[in-house]
Amino acid sequence: MSRLPSSKQAQNRRYYEEHREEYLKRARLYYAANREKVKAQVKAYQEAHAEESAAWHAAYGKAHRAENNERNRRWYSRHLEVRRARGREQALASYYRHLEANREKARAIAHARRALGNLTVADIRYVFGRSGGKCGLCGKYVRKTERSLDHIIPVALGGNNDLCNLQLAHLFCNLTRHTGSRIPAQTRML
Image (cartoon, rainbow, N blue to C red; front, side):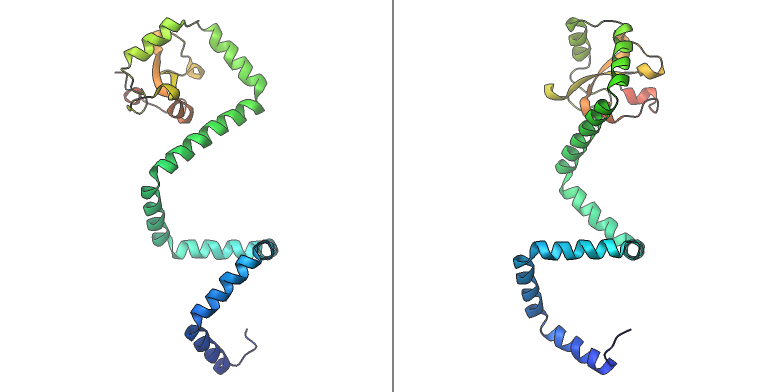
């Protein structure tokens, strides 16, 4: 509910629309001079009105779903390499966080893998050479810095370290695939 009569509101609205650029210029200058203060005020407001804000964002998202999807599609197509790099970074960071949080479990898994068979450097070179430098998961060429060995049948599902169960893969592809969710055609080894 507004405290102003509707005629005064209409007058204010007209004045604002006629002088919009001046208002925006003043607002930009104020923000530049008081950035931290404005950020603190916004944060305090958001914390005080969290439920209201969440409801508004949900309603806005629902009402503008097509526009948002199109804007996101355009951004993703323009920033493809950024997305890939961000995805790699997030996957590796998640992997290392998990490793750190589950150090004992990781040690036990590593021990179990070693127990299944020892690979020599020659064996690893053979697997890399057999693949022709292509990732067994996505089929793209693998740079030396991104190489990893992938178990076609994961160790968790009873696979072992036999040469016929190993393939070259991008480290990113290997870390982000889901154990047990692949079919043989996805291994690109057939």
